Image (tube, rainbow, N blue to C red; front, top):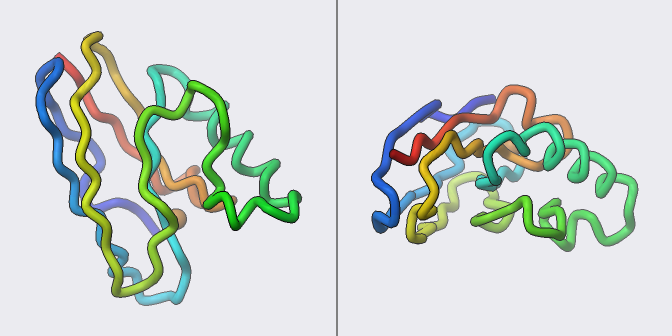
Length: 114
Ligand SMILES: [Cu+2]
């Protein structure tokens, strides 16, 4: 359970297009959530708390607040979503992770904005 791409680089403000496809053999939904630098663990913990909330899954385990910059919805096996955004204007190391509870420990990576 991990992303094919564990790291990639983009230029500040660049248009980024990500095709996120759930090709995992186990029938389980996944997403991809980009956060502000240094916020991976906080986003992961917030998503973990949503697991106990009745509407956690309905919200796609996307924590509210400004730590999350861009995200897909939960993608079911064999499905995909194309996520497009402008890279942040601030250079830095932007973490991405799957916020389905328990996945972020393994399903994560770094987008370097330079
Ligand atoms: Cu996942």
